[in-house]
Length: 219
Length: 215
Ligand SMILES: Nc1ncnc2c1ncn2[C@@H]1O[C@H](COP(=O)(O)OP(=O)(O)O)[C@@H](O)[C@H]1O
Ligand SMILES: [Mg+2]
Image (cartoon, rainbow over all chains, first blue to last red; front, side, top):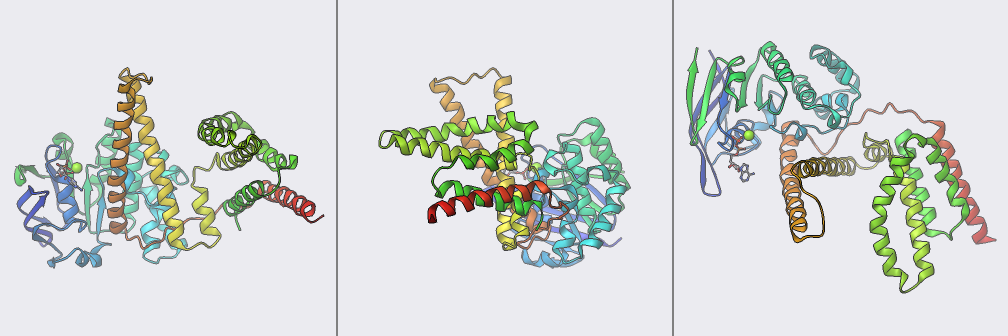
């Protein structure tokens, strides 16, 4: 199985605190991996490093076997990597659902008409057509997460990096997200702090503890 | 030209006329038109006006000791302008100001910076309201004790730090989502007669002011 993301000996230091060390991880084609860990263990930081938003202190990330030496190097894979931040409200760049969902397509130069057609399809797929004209900040937490996912999926990324896609959601919304993610056949790294939910999603679960990553379940 | 841009022009024009020309009874006309249009929300609009008046009154009291007449004028002008703008944008949850600037052909960077600033303020206000709720839930009562000031001081400090963190995180989003100093609005809002009538009334007021200045 070819690997699409490889982490090689990643370490990250923040204010002289060693937050991450010796992190080596391979994400295969259409593989789903989960990372759990307590608050402040560095999960979000690790995901930002994989997304090419934060530079590791040492070690490196490979995307499609291409070694990323700088954050700039990630630029050509921006469309292939989708990143969902922990606080979903930080994801939104436009006021209405439809405007935000088509944002990335428009930003890379696609015409409005085409972008709108693609958006219609994806909104239908995720059963959120009725939210189309709503202001993103007025939606419930669960709706916001699904809208954000729509904005990522519209680019047809190869790799999804999701930071706590179900945090602060009620049971029902959590289940909805699990169903959506289960139906997506792509490489994925999902960060969470509850294990029960994550086991429904990913066969491989790692725990981030004291800065190191250890595999805990392998089915 | 669409609804948001004409609204913005109306707001600029009215504020300009009211700030710089001698006080006129006629100033009330455009104001009445807006209030009539937003009549279901009049109570909410005035509530906002009253809150903002706390700031105005401080200013007015300052001037009052030097020039009572000017103080009254200042009070009237600022309230006219505020009331007009609050009423005009009261329902504008879609960030009509940024939309308006976009339609008027302002540089993409100005439009996106305006929008991000507005939405950041919005996010912090939401946060503040949530914090206030939880303070209430935990039995906090605002009074003039040192403890109250301290609590509010802490909250404002926290909001300040959150603002920094939030804007940093949003910067990361911009990178991740391919933002290049431009956001894209869909413009479906057509012109309504209301905006045109409003513009006419403001131009009318302006005409009268100019006529009297010249005559
Ligand atoms: N921008 C930052 N500057 C300084 N410290 C940070 C920053 N971001 C996170 N941290 C710190 O790094 C640690 C790990 O944070 P994070 O990666 O968000 O953990 P998790 O997502 O597992 O809760 C925390 O102790 C946090 O306070
Ligand atoms: Mg986190």
